[in-house]
Image 1 (cartoon, rainbow, N blue to C red):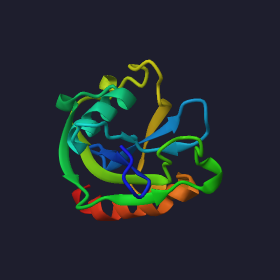
Image 2: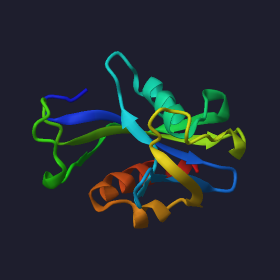
Image 3: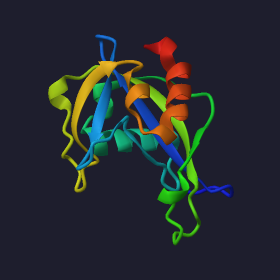
Image 4: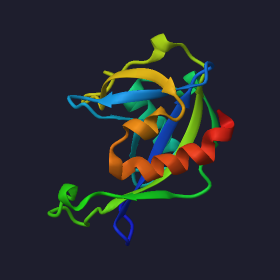
Length: 155
């Protein structure tokens, strides 16, 4: 769903473990890392989209996580001009995201990056909470900083 300003509704997921680390995954076939995220479908709530994306990208089910918090409002980032899909209508110029902080209550063996037809990630690791700011692609850095800052108290 793309709003009238060109932002696609999306969710982002920060998944923490009991050791104070967060889940960090490499995009399939690339050397870029990110948190799980994905679009909100028509007639889907942000929490519904979060659970769907969590399963599609990590294989985790609702019983494997506790939902601890979410951002108070939408956080936005713009897609660089050279990455815009100009032939798409309506034109998507960026993402507006509700971010969730989850705590893993399942086991690491519950993860399955290959549970969907087109896996988003091909490997993952646990990292320190602020490590993603050093490794995320530049145009997403500010929204990651906002999400991590707002949700840090729940870690």
